[in-house]
Image (tube, rainbow, N blue to C red; front, side, top):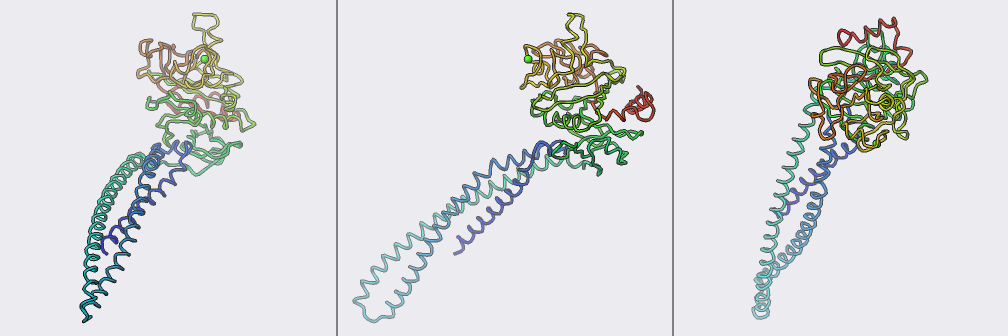
Length: 432
Ligand SMILES: [Ca+2]
């Protein structure tokens, strides 16, 4: 019969659609925050989630349709047999010349025929209904496919700028530069104690120095008011041409600063809205483990012209200001994990994640303010200084335009000619 064949084809089509969706879903199920980070494609996991949400319902529909089809196929088989039997009986009755016993037989056969006709009609009705269900399912699948395609296109649109990842790998960017890499860009690094490699932006200068960049602010395009997990894993976008904002992630910073016997220098570079640039270096910079809430420690201020805001700042309001705004030894705080020294929640009030004390004299993950100057009125419900601040340079009501936090082994910070390289390095961003 043509009808069941067609419906079977429909089921095969649907099963195929489902299984191909499942394959795609399975691949994307391996999405994790590490993979998603820095690949321009943060919505990839979203597509998988979307497909997964719809799959159980569609699969259920298909199973029940298959059951019904099998039932009909069985009924149809039985009917075929009976019709054949009836045909044979009729033929033999027609052939027979003895009317009397066959009259009863044919009249009961007539009843049978009528009954079977009814059955066949009701079966046909059922099949039509099933066909309708199938075509409506096909339509739904079609729409789902279209939606999935749209989502995919949305996701791949930013991927069209192919992200160029450099082939050299190493324990950090200095290791990569030591291996001969001379281009700044995206590289995979794997610190000695790391389980897996991860992507970083390496700034490699003409002196063969390789800075591993851990934080970048430049235009306010990325929101830095994030929770503990996001600060742990990292957020924002890594770009091969250093055009995007990001936080590399506390776990990665921890691994990068604790895996080598050579102390690490943290270099902080700041740009204000007048185009002035300043920097600050901290030697023996380390970020502790998550068990210690990614505690910040450093040995000493290693120089720079931006001043030592990590050591706190005397706001002129209370002699204890400097002590309570210093950062050395502070644990990391986010709005959902308050590790600060304040009765309130610094990270919540100041809209960031940072090594909060009570609360800060340096606040590079703060809120981005176009133009720099802001006031209590601009800060929302709390009224505290929540901008991107470095109080030994600009006041707490002045939010910086650009920041960079990057690290390098201390053995290489001044390689190539002392202060000269510092100026030269900084000159890479413009005039110091
Ligand atoms: Ca607190």
